[in-house]
Length: 302
Image (cartoon, rainbow, N blue to C red; front, side):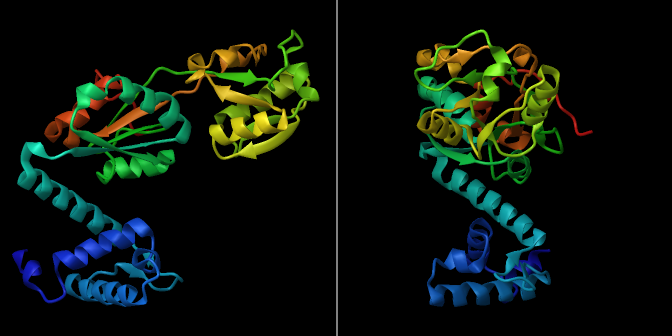
Protein backbone atom coordinates (compact mmCIF):
# COMPACT_ATOMS: atom_id res chain seq x y z
CA UNK A 1 0.00 0.00 0.00
CA UNK A 2 2.91 2.35 0.72
CA UNK A 3 3.81 2.26 -2.98
CA UNK A 4 1.00 4.65 -3.84
CA UNK A 5 2.81 7.46 -2.04
CA UNK A 6 5.85 7.12 -4.30
CA UNK A 7 3.96 7.13 -7.60
CA UNK A 8 4.36 9.97 -10.07
CA UNK A 9 1.28 12.19 -9.98
CA UNK A 10 0.53 11.60 -6.29
CA UNK A 11 1.33 14.46 -3.90
CA UNK A 12 -0.09 16.38 -0.97
CA UNK A 13 -0.37 19.48 -3.16
CA UNK A 14 -2.59 17.60 -5.62
CA UNK A 15 -4.74 16.29 -2.77
CA UNK A 16 -5.14 19.79 -1.36
CA UNK A 17 -6.29 21.07 -4.74
CA UNK A 18 -8.77 18.21 -4.91
CA UNK A 19 -10.18 19.35 -1.54
CA UNK A 20 -10.54 22.89 -2.94
CA UNK A 21 -12.43 21.60 -5.97
CA UNK A 22 -14.75 19.46 -3.84
CA UNK A 23 -15.54 22.42 -1.58
CA UNK A 24 -16.04 24.81 -4.50
CA UNK A 25 -18.07 22.34 -6.55
CA UNK A 26 -16.03 22.64 -9.74
CA UNK A 27 -12.53 23.34 -11.06
CA UNK A 28 -13.65 26.70 -12.45
CA UNK A 29 -14.94 27.90 -9.09
CA UNK A 30 -11.90 26.55 -7.24
CA UNK A 31 -9.64 28.54 -9.59
CA UNK A 32 -11.66 31.73 -8.94
CA UNK A 33 -11.51 32.85 -12.54
CA UNK A 34 -7.75 32.48 -12.90
CA UNK A 35 -7.11 30.63 -16.19
CA UNK A 36 -3.58 29.62 -15.20
CA UNK A 37 -4.73 28.18 -11.88
CA UNK A 38 -7.61 26.41 -13.61
CA UNK A 39 -5.24 24.75 -16.05
CA UNK A 40 -2.88 23.74 -13.23
CA UNK A 41 -5.65 22.19 -11.11
CA UNK A 42 -7.13 20.37 -14.10
CA UNK A 43 -3.74 18.88 -14.98
CA UNK A 44 -3.00 17.90 -11.39
CA UNK A 45 -6.34 16.12 -11.00
CA UNK A 46 -5.76 14.14 -14.19
CA UNK A 47 -2.33 13.14 -12.87
CA UNK A 48 -3.89 12.13 -9.55
CA UNK A 49 -6.52 10.07 -11.37
CA UNK A 50 -3.79 8.26 -13.31
CA UNK A 51 -1.75 7.56 -10.17
CA UNK A 52 -4.75 6.23 -8.24
CA UNK A 53 -6.51 4.53 -11.14
CA UNK A 54 -9.85 6.16 -10.31
CA UNK A 55 -12.14 8.79 -11.83
CA UNK A 56 -12.27 11.99 -9.77
CA UNK A 57 -14.15 14.23 -12.21
CA UNK A 58 -17.25 13.45 -14.24
CA UNK A 59 -16.33 15.04 -17.56
CA UNK A 60 -19.63 14.20 -19.25
CA UNK A 61 -21.14 17.33 -17.67
CA UNK A 62 -20.23 21.00 -17.96
CA UNK A 63 -18.80 22.20 -15.71
CA UNK A 64 -17.12 18.96 -14.67
CA UNK A 65 -18.61 17.45 -11.52
CA UNK A 66 -16.73 15.72 -8.69
CA UNK A 67 -17.44 12.00 -8.28
CA UNK A 68 -18.28 10.16 -5.07
CA UNK A 69 -14.73 8.80 -5.06
CA UNK A 70 -13.39 12.35 -5.17
CA UNK A 71 -15.64 13.35 -2.26
CA UNK A 72 -14.48 10.36 -0.22
CA UNK A 73 -10.81 11.04 -0.95
CA UNK A 74 -11.19 14.75 -0.12
CA UNK A 75 -12.87 13.91 3.20
CA UNK A 76 -10.03 11.53 4.11
CA UNK A 77 -7.42 14.10 3.14
CA UNK A 78 -9.08 16.77 5.29
CA UNK A 79 -9.18 14.46 8.30
CA UNK A 80 -5.50 13.62 7.81
CA UNK A 81 -4.44 17.27 7.55
CA UNK A 82 -6.53 18.16 10.60
CA UNK A 83 -4.93 15.38 12.65
CA UNK A 84 -1.43 16.44 11.58
CA UNK A 85 -2.18 20.05 12.53
CA UNK A 86 -3.48 18.98 15.95
CA UNK A 87 -0.35 16.97 16.65
CA UNK A 88 2.13 19.56 15.37
CA UNK A 89 0.53 22.60 17.00
CA UNK A 90 -0.21 20.95 20.33
CA UNK A 91 -2.60 22.44 22.85
CA UNK A 92 -1.82 26.10 22.16
CA UNK A 93 -3.67 26.27 18.85
CA UNK A 94 -7.10 27.92 18.62
CA UNK A 95 -9.27 24.98 17.56
CA UNK A 96 -12.36 25.34 15.40
CA UNK A 97 -15.73 23.64 15.80
CA UNK A 98 -17.80 23.22 12.66
CA UNK A 99 -21.54 23.27 13.29
CA UNK A 100 -24.29 22.57 10.75
CA UNK A 101 -27.91 23.67 11.22
CA UNK A 102 -30.72 25.63 9.61
CA UNK A 103 -30.57 29.43 9.70
CA UNK A 104 -33.29 29.79 12.35
CA UNK A 105 -31.74 27.14 14.62
CA UNK A 106 -28.34 28.85 14.35
CA UNK A 107 -29.81 32.24 15.21
CA UNK A 108 -32.27 31.25 17.92
CA UNK A 109 -30.68 28.21 19.57
CA UNK A 110 -26.97 27.91 18.90
CA UNK A 111 -25.81 31.54 18.91
CA UNK A 112 -27.51 32.42 22.25
CA UNK A 113 -26.26 29.21 23.87
CA UNK A 114 -22.69 29.62 22.66
CA UNK A 115 -22.72 33.27 23.69
CA UNK A 116 -23.71 32.38 27.25
CA UNK A 117 -21.28 29.48 27.54
CA UNK A 118 -18.37 30.97 25.61
CA UNK A 119 -16.05 30.96 28.63
CA UNK A 120 -16.51 27.22 29.00
CA UNK A 121 -15.13 26.78 25.48
CA UNK A 122 -12.17 29.12 25.65
CA UNK A 123 -9.72 28.85 22.78
CA UNK A 124 -12.37 27.73 20.29
CA UNK A 125 -13.29 29.45 17.03
CA UNK A 126 -16.64 28.76 15.39
CA UNK A 127 -17.72 27.89 11.87
CA UNK A 128 -21.50 27.96 11.38
CA UNK A 129 -22.88 26.35 8.22
CA UNK A 130 -26.49 26.85 7.08
CA UNK A 131 -27.31 23.37 5.75
CA UNK A 132 -30.17 20.99 5.04
CA UNK A 133 -30.70 17.84 7.12
CA UNK A 134 -29.27 15.66 4.35
CA UNK A 135 -26.11 17.76 4.06
CA UNK A 136 -25.69 17.70 7.84
CA UNK A 137 -26.02 13.91 7.93
CA UNK A 138 -23.44 13.58 5.16
CA UNK A 139 -21.13 16.12 6.80
CA UNK A 140 -21.19 14.31 10.14
CA UNK A 141 -20.51 10.94 8.51
CA UNK A 142 -17.60 12.33 6.50
CA UNK A 143 -16.23 14.26 9.51
CA UNK A 144 -16.68 17.58 7.69
CA UNK A 145 -18.90 18.72 10.58
CA UNK A 146 -18.33 18.28 14.29
CA UNK A 147 -21.92 18.85 15.43
CA UNK A 148 -25.24 19.13 13.61
CA UNK A 149 -28.77 20.12 14.64
CA UNK A 150 -31.65 19.32 12.29
CA UNK A 151 -34.74 17.21 11.75
CA UNK A 152 -34.55 13.60 10.63
CA UNK A 153 -30.93 12.90 11.55
CA UNK A 154 -30.24 9.20 12.15
CA UNK A 155 -27.70 7.14 14.06
CA UNK A 156 -25.54 5.41 11.49
CA UNK A 157 -21.94 4.22 11.64
CA UNK A 158 -19.96 6.60 13.86
CA UNK A 159 -22.72 9.23 13.73
CA UNK A 160 -24.70 9.40 16.97
CA UNK A 161 -28.03 11.19 17.36
CA UNK A 162 -30.24 12.31 20.22
CA UNK A 163 -33.63 14.02 20.21
CA UNK A 164 -33.86 17.53 21.59
CA UNK A 165 -37.00 18.96 23.25
CA UNK A 166 -39.73 19.60 20.68
CA UNK A 167 -41.34 22.96 20.04
CA UNK A 168 -44.50 24.27 18.37
CA UNK A 169 -45.52 27.09 16.05
CA UNK A 170 -47.35 30.37 16.62
CA UNK A 171 -49.07 32.88 14.38
CA UNK A 172 -47.59 36.38 14.39
CA UNK A 173 -50.03 39.07 13.32
CA UNK A 174 -48.91 42.22 11.44
CA UNK A 175 -47.52 45.09 13.50
CA UNK A 176 -50.26 47.17 15.09
CA UNK A 177 -52.93 44.47 14.93
CA UNK A 178 -54.46 43.14 18.15
CA UNK A 179 -55.30 39.43 18.53
CA UNK A 180 -58.99 38.56 18.79
CA UNK A 181 -61.09 35.42 19.23
CA UNK A 182 -61.78 34.83 15.53
CA UNK A 183 -59.17 32.08 15.43
CA UNK A 184 -58.56 30.54 12.01
CA UNK A 185 -61.24 32.75 10.39
CA UNK A 186 -58.85 35.69 10.60
CA UNK A 187 -56.70 33.96 7.96
CA UNK A 188 -59.44 33.82 5.32
CA UNK A 189 -58.73 37.43 4.37
CA UNK A 190 -55.31 38.09 5.92
CA UNK A 191 -52.43 36.86 3.73
CA UNK A 192 -49.92 34.63 5.51
CA UNK A 193 -46.25 33.97 4.78
CA UNK A 194 -45.02 30.34 4.90
CA UNK A 195 -41.89 28.40 4.22
CA UNK A 196 -41.75 26.88 0.76
CA UNK A 197 -42.12 23.13 0.27
CA UNK A 198 -44.45 20.44 1.54
CA UNK A 199 -42.98 19.57 4.94
CA UNK A 200 -44.71 18.31 8.05
CA UNK A 201 -46.04 21.72 9.07
CA UNK A 202 -47.51 22.40 5.63
CA UNK A 203 -49.32 19.05 5.82
CA UNK A 204 -50.55 19.95 9.29
CA UNK A 205 -51.90 23.27 8.00
CA UNK A 206 -53.68 21.48 5.16
CA UNK A 207 -55.43 19.28 7.71
CA UNK A 208 -56.38 22.36 9.73
CA UNK A 209 -57.88 23.99 6.63
CA UNK A 210 -60.14 20.97 6.13
CA UNK A 211 -61.18 20.68 9.78
CA UNK A 212 -61.79 24.43 10.14
CA UNK A 213 -63.50 24.81 6.78
CA UNK A 214 -61.21 27.61 5.61
CA UNK A 215 -58.66 28.29 2.89
CA UNK A 216 -55.46 30.08 3.78
CA UNK A 217 -54.51 33.11 1.74
CA UNK A 218 -50.82 32.46 1.07
CA UNK A 219 -49.18 35.79 0.41
CA UNK A 220 -45.65 34.45 -0.07
CA UNK A 221 -43.37 31.47 0.41
CA UNK A 222 -39.79 31.89 1.62
CA UNK A 223 -36.77 29.64 2.10
CA UNK A 224 -36.12 30.63 5.73
CA UNK A 225 -37.95 32.03 8.74
CA UNK A 226 -35.92 35.26 8.90
CA UNK A 227 -36.92 35.96 5.28
CA UNK A 228 -40.56 35.12 6.04
CA UNK A 229 -40.66 37.40 9.11
CA UNK A 230 -39.02 40.32 7.30
CA UNK A 231 -41.40 40.02 4.34
CA UNK A 232 -44.47 39.70 6.57
CA UNK A 233 -43.49 42.82 8.51
CA UNK A 234 -42.83 44.75 5.32
CA UNK A 235 -46.09 43.69 3.65
CA UNK A 236 -48.32 43.84 6.72
CA UNK A 237 -49.10 40.12 6.57
CA UNK A 238 -49.22 37.33 9.14
CA UNK A 239 -46.51 34.69 9.48
CA UNK A 240 -46.11 31.38 11.27
CA UNK A 241 -43.05 31.43 13.53
CA UNK A 242 -41.42 28.62 15.56
CA UNK A 243 -41.66 28.93 19.33
CA UNK A 244 -37.89 28.50 19.38
CA UNK A 245 -36.56 31.96 20.22
CA UNK A 246 -40.04 33.37 20.88
CA UNK A 247 -39.36 34.22 24.55
CA UNK A 248 -36.64 36.68 23.60
CA UNK A 249 -39.20 38.92 21.87
CA UNK A 250 -41.77 40.40 24.24
CA UNK A 251 -43.34 42.45 21.43
CA UNK A 252 -44.27 39.28 19.57
CA UNK A 253 -46.44 38.04 22.45
CA UNK A 254 -48.79 40.99 21.91
CA UNK A 255 -49.24 39.96 18.26
CA UNK A 256 -49.84 36.25 18.85
CA UNK A 257 -53.21 35.16 17.42
CA UNK A 258 -54.33 31.96 19.14
CA UNK A 259 -55.53 29.26 16.76
CA UNK A 260 -57.51 26.25 18.09
CA UNK A 261 -55.59 23.02 17.52
CA UNK A 262 -52.28 24.68 16.63
CA UNK A 263 -50.73 23.40 19.87
CA UNK A 264 -51.09 19.86 18.56
CA UNK A 265 -48.22 20.43 16.15
CA UNK A 266 -44.75 19.77 17.55
CA UNK A 267 -41.46 19.93 15.70
CA UNK A 268 -38.56 17.75 16.79
CA UNK A 269 -34.90 18.51 16.25
CA UNK A 270 -32.07 16.01 16.49
CA UNK A 271 -28.57 16.65 17.76
CA UNK A 272 -25.93 14.74 15.82
CA UNK A 273 -22.20 14.24 16.26
CA UNK A 274 -19.42 11.95 15.12
CA UNK A 275 -18.32 9.67 17.95
CA UNK A 276 -14.73 9.76 16.72
CA UNK A 277 -14.57 13.49 17.43
CA UNK A 278 -16.03 13.10 20.89
CA UNK A 279 -13.26 10.70 21.85
CA UNK A 280 -10.36 12.84 20.65
CA UNK A 281 -11.65 16.42 20.96
CA UNK A 282 -12.82 17.55 24.41
CA UNK A 283 -14.17 20.84 23.06
CA UNK A 284 -16.62 18.96 20.81
CA UNK A 285 -17.62 16.68 23.69
CA UNK A 286 -18.27 19.78 25.81
CA UNK A 287 -20.49 21.36 23.15
CA UNK A 288 -22.51 18.16 22.76
CA UNK A 289 -22.97 18.06 26.54
CA UNK A 290 -24.05 21.71 26.59
CA UNK A 291 -26.66 21.03 23.93
CA UNK A 292 -28.20 18.34 26.09
CA UNK A 293 -26.90 15.02 24.79
CA UNK A 294 -26.21 13.35 28.14
CA UNK A 295 -27.60 9.97 27.20
CA UNK A 296 -27.05 7.48 24.42
CA UNK A 297 -28.04 7.89 20.79
CA UNK A 298 -31.78 7.71 20.35
CA UNK A 299 -32.79 7.48 16.71
CA UNK A 300 -31.60 4.44 14.81
CA UNK A 301 -31.75 4.02 11.05
CA UNK A 302 -34.99 2.38 10.00
